[in-house]
Length: 267
Image (cartoon, rainbow, N blue to C red; front, side, top):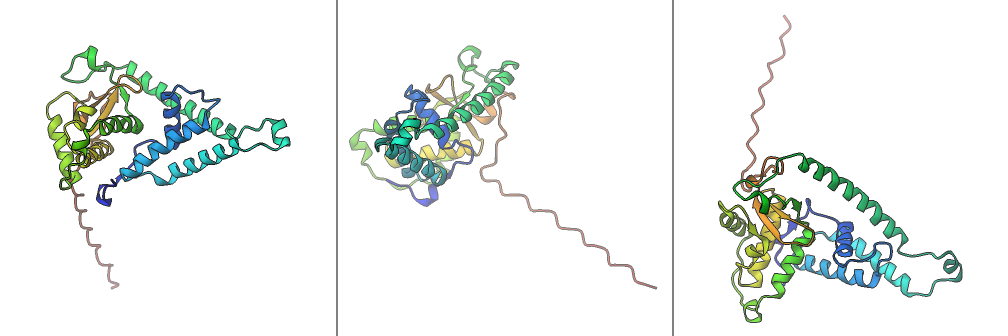
């Protein structure tokens, strides 16, 4: 079921197609130098289909990468000309090079972030240092999608078919912030599992993404593919805090321009 256009969520703060490929390679423990194109293409398209169902605004560059993967897959299935066979031209070579360069960039950025954190007394206010201090890894869009898909697939069939009126995403946003309240955190799946229908589950997921985009909440993990905890932005320590954007505040009216004095008269 595709949500209405009113539920579109822009992914300005989330990752792109190279991030998705690296995520799938790491999750499936694949060799980046010898990518099984058929398998990675199927996994990639499955995620894209889910993103389309959710009306996530990520069509352009993700679809270009999908076309690239399909082209590589087609070339790998066709017998190579003799000249290319002698040169051992791997159709994956350019993509692998791009992934390796991007991975180096990501690892350098991650190293700088970890170095900053390691020099701070990092802990989440109001929670035990030992249990919460390790949740410093930002959960990716694809971690969130994986967790969402798990919950969606485990909905009871009889519950999944229950229809109800659409709840505006703005209402879900307020509901999530209210649920977090004074809690130090809530798990992402805990937030999702409060819902009883597919439609409400999708709207809640989109509300979480919107809150992350607005920097009202953050989603953190202890390790890759691990459990996801959701924190209100103001509950984070200063070292890890993000500046929250207002949800409903309208821009303040600009001050009226002062009238320019009339030009002096010639006397």
